[in-house]
Length: 192
Image (cartoon, rainbow, N blue to C red):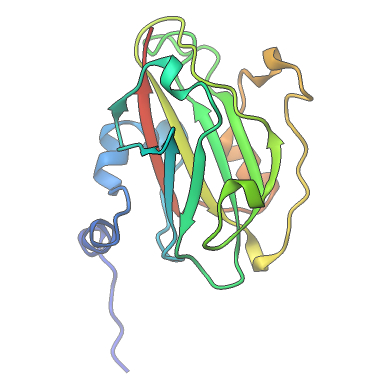
């Protein structure tokens, strides 16, 4: 039996071939380490997020008005019978140079079936569109595969109070629900 070591380069090649965000682009945009420690492409799932029928590209600039409505988030591929969670977050409030409210929660949807979309899941925290007060903010969508293909029970961390969306932690949410690292990440930028 021959053991094959997965190098960072081989993971990046595989990730790019499958349309995933590369670790390098996530590190360059500082999504790693600002929001997560890494990405696991093990499930083969991809996350496609669209506003008004237009799929976002990583790092694309969108005006707040163009991303105000709830996006359409679709899971491409993934583990058969698997369930997924999407977390949407802004790591930059109020100002990217001084993000004292890091992170600001924008969306959570749990229990989305593989190959499905967010409308088939449980919206825990409704979408709150971008409203960056200063500078250019990153709006990051992270897709997590739920453990053991089991539904998870999650509550809105803000309790429905928009002001309590500040200082959300994707890491803590993922840890609390045994989600591990995200399996796919996509994001856009926005400013006033």
